Length: 103
Image (cartoon, rainbow, N blue to C red; front, side):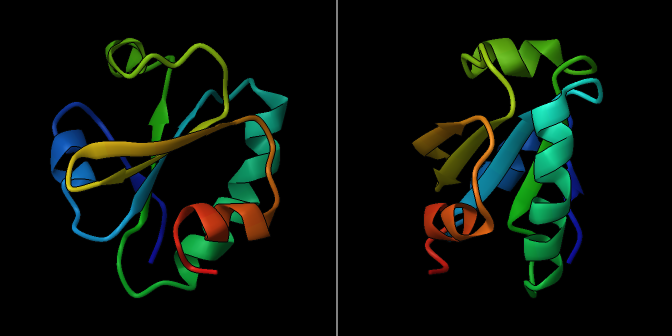
């Protein structure tokens, strides 16, 4: 699958997944976010369902504020609507897989 673009209209539905999903809070001007994009895209492409969503903090500031995003990239793991873990900054593909419970 591809990275799912999240908006206030589909965010809550996405994080209600029974299996862990990741939300990447990012900005287009952020160098560390640009570094993470190909890693997240590759992992998403290897899956048979949408497990990684992205939120542009400039477009959806209210979502970023609601979830306490102060630094980006902020990778948040949700399951059944509950925030399970947060990782800030650049991380390896292995770490992303670990956060998602895929490794």
